[in-house]
Length: 276
Image 1 (cartoon, rainbow, N blue to C red):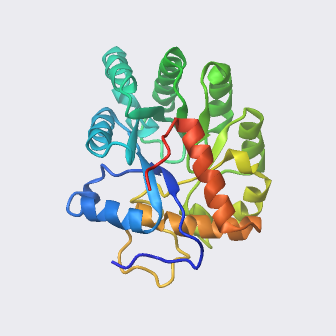
Image 2 (image 1 turned 30 degrees about the horizontal axis):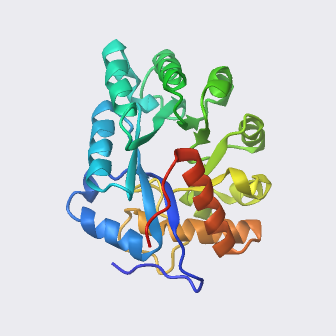
């Protein structure tokens, strides 16, 4: 599989959201990491989106220390998992030094795979746990902003940082999050000429110090890739394409923007500087 190239200086990128525990990576996981590194992606956060997924994310981070880090949480699709026993499991996971954020957590009223009341309860319980442990938040919100915002606001001062992962919403939501001093994760949604065109204007108003980039692999393969891969699986090596499109939309130098987003990621998640 070819690695996308850009005619710019080599850089050290951080992918703040990659679902590397997904079954599609089982057969070529080490090759995926090698391709990411060849494309300048030096560090990745492996997303934990369920109890088992969070355990698996931690296991990957423990095997690849300094390169992979983990989040631990329960996605709203799995809200039914969050009971007192689950909180104990998450508390243990979140105390591991390889875990750098609580989540993926939040609300998803687009798919409604879990009842909305259960989603809100699961979100509240995880927010309280993150506040207890003073952990950064890794957040998911889709078509649920009206319920999501007050819950986030209620704990924002009690956590060191909050990342709105895979932002796809509109101007009001963006500025609501920026007003709460949140960081904004931009994915290949920006590269989608069908659904992401509104983001090309919105990303210009995100302060550079609040920008983060991510692939959300294996989802959201950037549609702007040329040549287009024959497959549909996204992977961290394509983070460079997200960076390229983000720099184009903002009218900025990609090397400078890469440095800024990586610095932001390391500050938010407490990541070490990678060794050269």
